Amino acid sequence: MSKLLKNLLVSSRGYSSSSKIRGRKYVLTKYFDGEPKKSDFNIVEEELPELKDGEILAEAEYISVDPYMRAYMIGYKLPTDMIGGQVAKIIASRNDKYPVGKFIAGAFGWRTHTVCNPAAPPKLGFLPLTILPDLGQHPVSLGLGLLGMPGNTSYFGLKEICMPKPGETIAITGAAGAVGSHVGQIGKIIGCRVIGFAGTNEKCDYLTKQLGFDHAFNYKTSDVKAALREGAPKKVDCYFDNVGGEISSTIMSHMNHFGRVAVCGSISSYNDKSLPKVTILQPSIVFKELKVEGFLVNRWFDRWEEGINANLKWLLEGKLKYEEKTYHGFDNMVDAFVGMMRGENTGKAVVKVKS
Ligand SMILES: NC(=O)c1ccc[n+]([C@@H]2O[C@H](COP(=O)([O-])OP(=O)(O)OC[C@H]3O[C@@H](n4cnc5c(N)ncnc54)[C@H](OP(=O)(O)O)[C@@H]3O)[C@@H](O)[C@H]2O)c1
Image 1: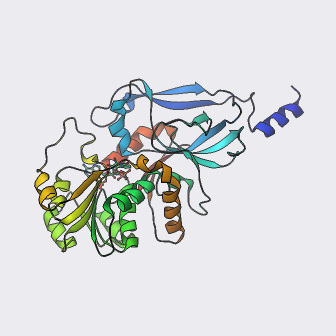
Image 2 (image 1 turned 30 degrees about the horizontal axis):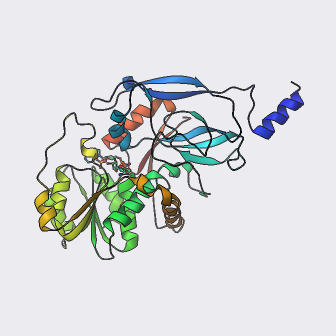
Image 3 (image 1 turned 90 degrees about the vertical axis):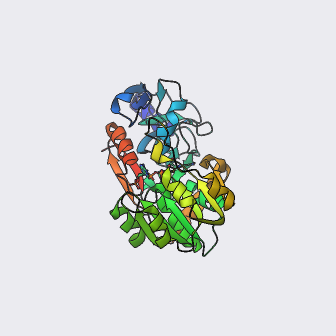
């Protein structure tokens, strides 16, 4: 093939058949037992297929580590590609709607490169394939946090399940993480009193001094009942439950009549080999006539853009702030995953693929 023809092929398709790229991906070969381990995975090289009409080749820029990954893999037959969202750059395209250079978010799993047709994207996680909006000075990694799955979990979970009204009190566990820190800020935007529980004093300072939470308590060192009396003197109207376990029973016993509980997750037990026993919840639910509802964020896939746009607007207006804990290198995915589960992160934990 002449050099001219070859160049023409590359520029019209954004892809050269002669420069085959080899990708890498994580394959889970053992079910997690306690904390995830590197030896639970194999890192496998894969040759990428030629692009067909309508397809794109995307290179991972940031890959997400999320608690749901710890809870979900038991449902997959082994060996299986590891699930997860990522923000990737389109580096070749045979699809006019997805041009080279754009950043997309998608559920591509823990892999460096993805070939797909955006009309039928991979479903290795809970992130519809979207082109990221212009984020100005903000990093594209926000597509995995504030402007992605956790952002929409916060937006829809709080508004649709807790339905807070101005002046009400919201309690949040896992408050300094990706979802919790975002829920609290939306609570403040709505005009609520917001109290949070997090695992270090530094995280609590961040919540009150940077994000405007009214009170934040270190759940590892404080008496939760006393904290509730101090932080929520009019009791709790809405509880956004990220952690489950005994603290949730305590908070639900300190709620007002007709309080609403959004059961988002139960990270306190994800690594446990046997499920913990906690104080019975039913008396509080019955006598206070609480509404307790679990949810999965994919319930709102058809309203995904609404959540992204609302969060983006608040971000650009300076009403939403964020922190990220960035790990570096594709080979360090498991360290990042374990670190996030241990609480190393304030805000969203992400892995920058090229260190
Ligand atoms: N339902 C849905 O659709 C949906 C969607 C997204 C997330 N979620 C759930 O929401 C929760 C938060 O997710 P995220 O992505 O925002 O993660 P995250 O809060 O950013 O990170 C996990 C945090 O969990 C905390 N943690 C770890 N072990 C704990 C324990 N034993 N007790 C209390 N806290 C503990 C740690 O913070 P500390 O230092 O404070 O301990 C850690 O930073 C998880 O339960 C997740 O499964 C649900």
